Length: 279
Image (cartoon, rainbow, N blue to C red; front, side, top):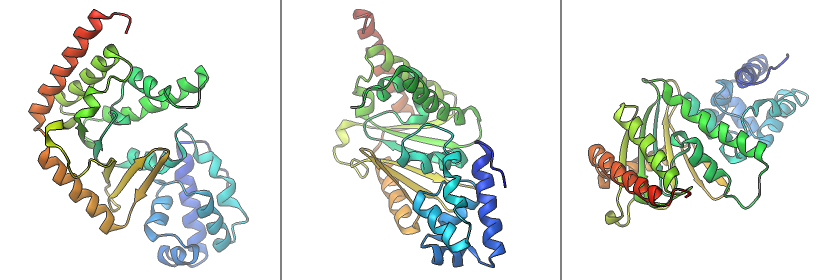
């Protein structure tokens, strides 16, 4: 079987896994037990929604007698240049019909403008050559193209006020970034809520979370920290994350008030940029 480059490669990879599993006379549950993987994880791989890691692939090869097939073709699944810990979440993001994200410090990736993304991606401890930085920015901005479809996914963006106040890239970049978010909200492409500083502690203060729902698979949660990220599929954990999100949402400003705040802060950045035109 020949596997092409992305975007078809993940689907073909999943089809091959399903074919070999069925040829071995195994259900997804039986394969999950033998390969020490969750049945949901195998279902996502077969549906082309998730990339197995190296250890997963090796166990699948061993259980199905695939002679190294699943490990050997892993590199062909890496069509976009993103952090290793985010690859699985990126695949889910592209398939979700609803996304609810909370960002404590930075604008979520799918909402970032090119200038804001460049400021974020160029600020790491490891210097990047211009070509590498361009590729990273292009990948980040491409994620936002899922918002080009008016109907799917439905996106709720809940931002801590710190996201608005932190001048990433300077006042001009921040003015453009906040205006971009306002435009998406005004065009009914996202639902926007801000958690103001005045709330104090809230249910999501400890970190970033993205909740995703799908047409034919259970919902998942993705949480991340410094150089790390984790996809949660266990229903009880996903539900805990959903409840925490709902509690924080109860403390947030309304959609209308959040838009007013973003417009006000963007205007402040605009005035600051005019005072310091080279910022």
